[in-house]
Length: 259
Ligand code: GLN
Image 1 (cartoon, rainbow, N blue to C red):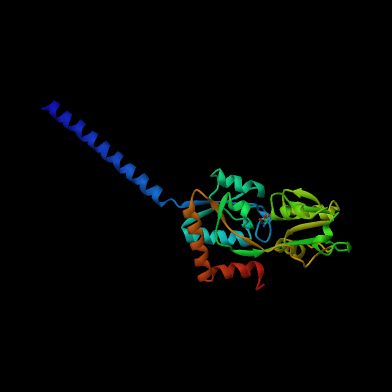
Image 2: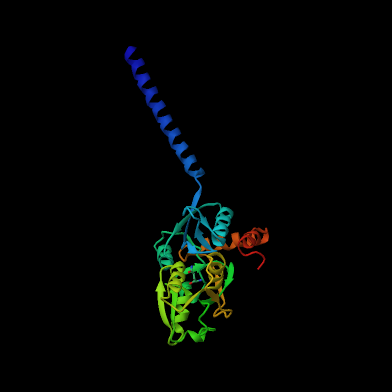
């Protein structure tokens, strides 16, 4: 009898352990279901007013940053932003290290071969800034024979290379192109107009001027992987929602006023 009781006890203990084990497993499942999905966002945070870091270098700010946070929220994701060189963004997406890119990135045919783009979310174009006292440059064709700073891998780099006789100097960031103009290493900077304008407005420089002429008309889009076409659909749906509910306009006004 004693032996029978012992056996029963062992059996009971075994059952209890099994039950506890099962319960534990369930708990884990619930926890992972509750964990928010993360949207891995790539940007080159040196392109104010679209993406830049605050003075402490922690918080990502700008029109794109506010927009992608709102888009991620709409899609049910937690936004996780990574700062990468502009020319490294598409390779990082192709290597599946990112889910999306938002970086003032112009939609063009060359990039469309590699990534999907959302519907356009901002209309931009290229402009020139020069030193105030340099009266020899007043339009794009005047760049012939001049030294021009551009950012590597950008539409500025592509377009200025087409101007015959212009000497193109490529830099990692738009901030570096502005520094080069200041230092006198180049005669002009070509960059997206809102970024040139923001630089003139915010940096306190007084010895540069912007030219009115726009070389191109470009649309920015949010890039995602061609292997995940459902991501583009979700991005477009979220953008549409933000246009419909007024959130897009709010973010636009915050960074660009009514213009
Ligand atoms: N709009 C330009 C491009 O897509 C520049 C973008 C950037 O420098 N962040 O090439």
